[in-house]
Length: 277
Image (cartoon, rainbow, N blue to C red; front, side):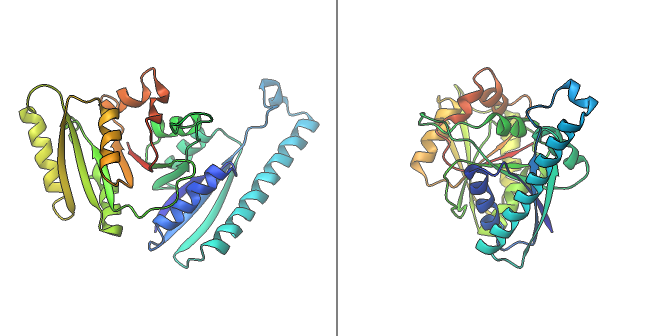
């Protein structure tokens, strides 16, 4: 049974991601774990002295979190009645990223599905800081769902690669899991700078070819564009339903998303985004 973590702050944005997850995995036996984390505003160092009024506030926040999670599960069951799906809830006095780390260590989930925050007043969809931290630090795959995105069957996956990562099966298996569910085609996109690819890159390309040999795939090469531009252009040209990237500390992914311009992550990203560590 697949174990899927659904972080929620009870916003429309989080609800949108939950709807995506239950539809994506509608034919799979899954346990969905709904997670709400809370750290009351009054939480400070002195708080640890635990005076009675502060403890009462914490208790109220905790009970509210549990009640809202229970109500949310009832809403999901009512709207998406599915015998394949079971639901559990976790209400935690913790930060989101710290709680996710602890849950991962406890082998609670296989994958995380969460919403991104829409950018107010901007055309791009920017990720909220919580989502960015989770994408950067999570030790299991994460699917980030843009605000307002309605579920689409992922028939076309876009997988940009620089052929620099020596891919292991565990890196690519989450892609195969989706292709197996939906007979999906994988579009492998490589951006060329200057000359041809090196011998090592060619070996990695052949490795990918071998890995995807039981599914539909296409290789695409584009020249002299930056990665963000290449992804955006490809999305406009082809009806891509899911963008997939490997988060490698020394790859273009790191440069694209986490160097100085952290909000470049909003490069017109209007489709779900699967990040694999």
